[in-house]
Image (cartoon, rainbow, N blue to C red; front, side, top):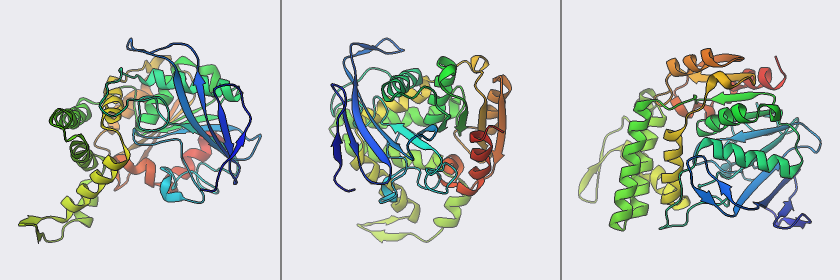
Length: 343
């Protein structure tokens, strides 16, 4: 990215305006931030980024627990997490909307989170919604056109819609529901135990890589793995190594190089602590369910939609399973067009 030019702002805030109609910065929430589960933080720093034409409606885009504020980077798409869906001419069109996002509280970004080797209080999706509220207050955004959230981001969208319905016109919830499925919790709880064991053993990064490798096997589908990894094993370093092993190891090592083990524990736990009252959410909602999603079953999304006051369900199929919200640009075009245009 080009060097960022500093722009003036209030105390505790630094804004930077690079080319391509993008701005990002840090601001501090003053005083004590009381968390939903009883923890307290003081102060809380929030890192944010917004891309799109000045004066356009604002859409907040939120992803999974490994996502960050860099939703779409035109100059470096590989460093953004939603490059298939957000950007010029894509379903979330940055030529029509300003796309806002922030680093999650308790995560590995520049928003307040755990330091390596330190514990951190439990964080709720309601806390992330509160951070978003304070952010749009700070930026002078009276109301969001929509929140588009995938996976954990969809959970945060639902929490915001329940608590602050006057501040958002629509929700687009992808691969997420009002509460986690126990089987998904089972998989994540094993991942967290792997990381805790690694921390206690002094091998936290290796443990995080292993937990992420396990997680990847739950995000995708058997059909995709069969198509990609049916090859023969290779003899490496005194043992057989299978193609899928190399893939999972590479994904795990890449993740562990960029994320803090304690932050992973915090946000993974936040998924499983997630509970919102769908019957209290009156904001019009487009809910996207993927029939092959192992973590968020279709039946659970259907049940949530039945409890929401104003919702439309979109069912899609994808070889990418839970990760379809990251990949299926073509199938999501109609969803985003209908939701953002108010149809």
